[in-house]
Amino acid sequence: MEEGYTSLPTSHLLGSVPAVVAEGKISSTVGQASTGNLQPFPPYDGGYNAPGSPISAQQTTTNWQGIFSISSYTQYFNVDSDVVIDRMISSIYPMNGFDRKIDGNPDLYGPVWISATLIFMLAALGNVGTYLKQKGVDPSTTWIFDVSYINWAACIIFGYALAVPAAFYFLLHYFGHSASLIRLWCMWGYSLFVFLPTCLLLVVPMAVFQWIITILSGAVSSWFVTLNLKAYAQASDMMVLLVSAMVLQFALALFIKIFFFA
Image 1 (cartoon, helix red, strand yellow):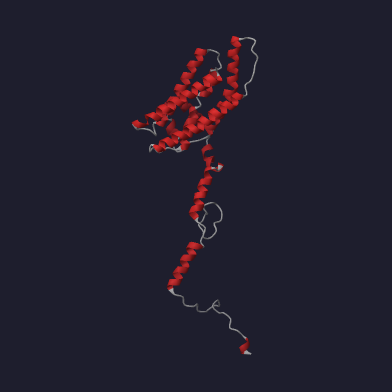
Image 2 (image 1 turned 180 degrees about the vertical axis):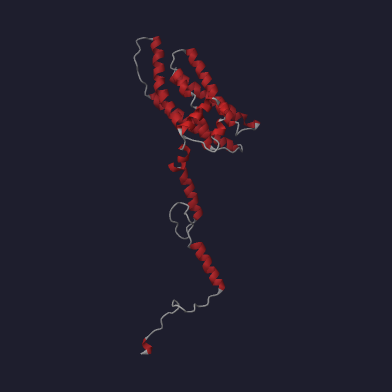
């Protein structure tokens, strides 16, 4: 009868003595468990990481994905109306310390709102200004709305507000100066605010008055950009960038006058 039974493992029972294992095996086993099976908390990508997966690769992928994620830019739209209005006033009066106001809290809400408003104002008031000027020359002129003004305004304003700060960002880094792309986008976006009242004044069909307004708006916008770029370009060899920024702002003012209010 006893030969028909097999011995059962008793290592799990209370009072049983575990087998002796060498210290080298214990340390290697613990090391494998801590490096291979344990998961970081919280995970880098907010989800579950399979055991043995390369964390560094996942973290790099997550960072690159964050550039194209809308949630990464929500912090730059978390501003109230008082802050935006104060920064718009500072763009017209550059000595009011605009760079200090956006220090640590640059926003993109103001630049996007200003750019979109400027596009619609150029399209609408540009047609009105052209009509009034033609009406003064030929009273029989009929009202015609040129829809292409919207396309031109959108391409020029959005392209300028995005491409020019990005170009200066790479140039500053190329010359060894640290710069923030968000801050440059913020600064250049607010520099367009002066062209909103400019569009209202350019409707007046008086050539001399229009040119005076164009020169003043270009000067104010150029001065604002130059003062804020000096924080990044203090060296004498960076004067080329400052002059380039001034020329670009004046060129934009001239383009608005000649193309939309000719």
